[in-house]
Amino acid sequence: MITKVIMPQGGQDLEKGTVVRWLKQEDEPVKKGEIICEVETEKAVFEVEAPADGYLRKIVVQTGMEAAIFSVIGLVGDPSDSIEGFTEGDEASSEQDKDAQNAGQGNRLDKATIISPGKKIIISPKAKRIAKENQVPINKLKGTGSLGRIVVEDVLAYLDKRGAKDKYASVKKTPGGQMLLMGKIKQVTAQRMSLSKQTVPHFYVTLAVDMTRALKVREEINQESNLSKEEAVAINDFIIKACALALNEFKEINASFSDKEHIILWEDINIGIAVSHKDGVIVPVIKHPHQLPLLALSKQIRQLVNAAREGKQISIVPGRFTISNLGMHNVDNFSAIINPPETGILAVSTIRKTIGVMEDNSYAIRDMMNLTLSIDHRVCDGVLACKFINRIKDLLETPKNLLN
Image (cartoon, rainbow, N blue to C red; front, top):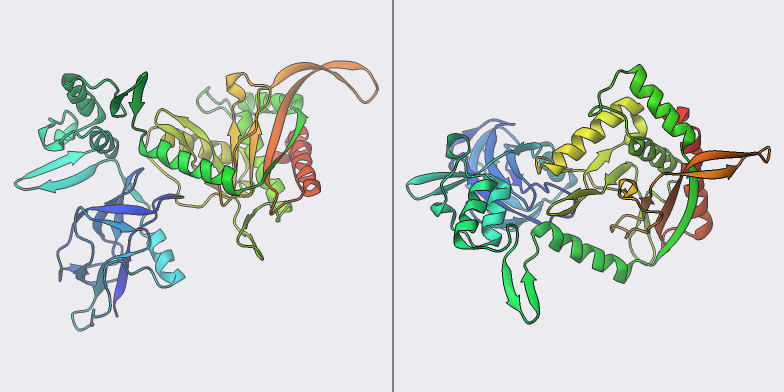
């Protein structure tokens, strides 16, 4: 039986990948789960495992070639199996094929390895991207990393010698200024945000949330657990947990617009976290945050965000909702652009001390925070959006309900 080796997706919204190298030759025996090739996406390099025991019958996509995600890049089977009918560009024909691909793509590499005639060049994915954007021949670079690995600093040093004016993008003169070539992340972001504003009818709901209790509970947790500053539970962890619980109750918002007649209600609840990165905005995705205790969730979020900022990891699960928190940047209010095919995104502003009127008509200083929900009006009407954001407010104002 012939089993397909599939180009892994390697992250939400990616459309293609490049085969960096094959670790097996055609007709060599392979074991299920054995690493047989490495592929590179815009964000990282992944090891691809053999989907079954047998032999690598055919390499469909050669080293250095690009292929669409979920397309066939190789074939595994017994010597007696016919490989006729399997051609380059074939897509995974079943959900089983894609599930196998997802299961076998999770090993990310910290380096990309490229074979050139007579020499083995080891270069990190980020260094390779910067070199490609600035037309730097990697065979002229001297790697200063371990085992001669070419790292970002090596590419930047070459650019400095060449007189490049920008470390991360090509610069061209244009009347009255300079023209910068955007990196891949910014290009993808620009395309998706333009598409969103052109095709998704946004509307917005804003309200203020009293975070006084949440701040107190957060302080108590961090003190009782003796957590360091780096390990401390963040207010954003409370917000993510509250959103996840609310999405679990409001299934119509954990959804996507499909066509004129259909809306998809998703079973999985995965929340994207907008993270600032020097190359643009990246959105790692946390899977099923509503099912995790707050301390465990906080640890996962911290690991995911730190890895994303370092360019070491991407999320292979699709996001269903996104949170954009600019609270640390001194903003009173803002609205965010929906990331299709998601239905909503929550904008989080700065917590400020405000004089509030209590239930007994007394005055008190409270820690208030504005939330703005951007929603796809094709999927969600105004009343539902109001109920959803008010549920988030209720959960944040009773923070002990978020701990377990």
